[in-house]
Image (cartoon, rainbow, N blue to C red; front, top):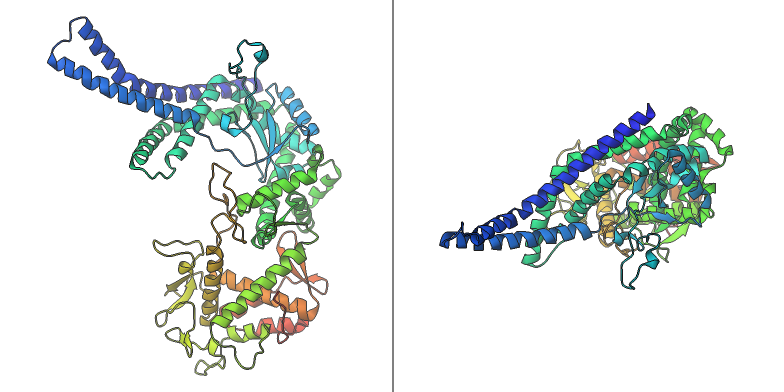
Length: 624
């Protein structure tokens, strides 16, 4: 039954591959039609049948058209053949650095009766696939066939031998899964090397990848009008061919996947069901680790150097909290798949750096403004620094809104933030702080109060920091007037909106000073990934809204006050990221009280929490 399924899937994939190749053949046939017509006209003249001034003019016109079409066809074919297909950024794993892993993959390929992958690479993602890297631009010279060195002639090119695709494995799988689970998960992937070796399927895949790379070439900005015209024609032809073979290519890949899945059923079928549960769990833990733990560090110019080891800690913590995952930690006594690597620490560091490049846009290597950080130093190097940087930014923006009230000292205090955001109980009463005085025209006693002046009654609501306008910059679009009071980005009170607008503008100015795809220090990395595509390739989160920015900054101010006045310590929570430890326990009920202050102007819940925790808001805090 399995053999019939494998054969049916392979035959379906091959038939679709032939359909893709027929599209290529039809395109070539259309291209040579003018040349064929010219041959007929010339033959008619030679036999004395098609003679006369009219036929002579036709021969000249068709001949010129045939030459132009053939030249254009040759140029397009050359671009399709030589255009560099996109290659996924990965960390290569040599056989010397992972002999056990290579041995396991080869044994698996032998059991499946398929060619073994030519190499293994790791990606900082929870996925695995085969990737064809036989294009000359993708790596070292191609392999030579046996006896190539015995061929006469020194300048003769070596005979090309078919090379199997590269096996790309998600690095979190190696650290979280056991050896048997990893073998069961990659079995269907390795089984895909069989259909990939089929000549028709391989040729169809090369053609589709060439067309895709040609579209990228045509989209490259050109200056000259001739180059722009040539690229327009090139892109139009490539899109036309891709549209004609898109459905066939998709069905071909489905057939390949079905054949590989049927063949892999003979290997560890029962274990694969259990391993698939670990795939979903690893994905959830990896996503949580990147968004909650790694992203704050990347924003501070630090990159955690043991992300894969961190996902094990995060999933272990998840299994401790979640009853549904209680049985997963019992697996940790078995041999982890990362033991198949000779130096798992160095591989983890390389994949962690690649993750920072892909998801944040960091540079290619460590330097003074982009340093690795281990998990033991994370609370001090990342959590504490992030809080104090946000607190310093909050006070800078508050200073820009107006003069400091007399009752507050020159040192930064949490009490000033509380007073500024507190909504007066009597609207007719003028506040004593000029910076918090509501105005009709966004102007204060000393000039403009906010970063921009707004019309009377308009609420200041920051737009997303990545918004672009036709003539403005990121910083210019950070502030926008919103008349809808129910908009989700509205932080709440007028004072909160004014402070949030200033924070959004300040953050936008800082980000606009950093080139696209660079780190927080403002240095652009070399564009070597994905044919020079802009980094980050896969941003983890959309820009924070005004409410989120203000909430984060006020929370950071409270945490700084807790550390400086109540003996609290910064800590790392594997599932929630930076956290505050008060008297040895995590402060998990702070955010609702901060939101009450921001959205309603009510400091009561937060002041009660501060008093219960022994935090003194009137005491100065350290910002650096």
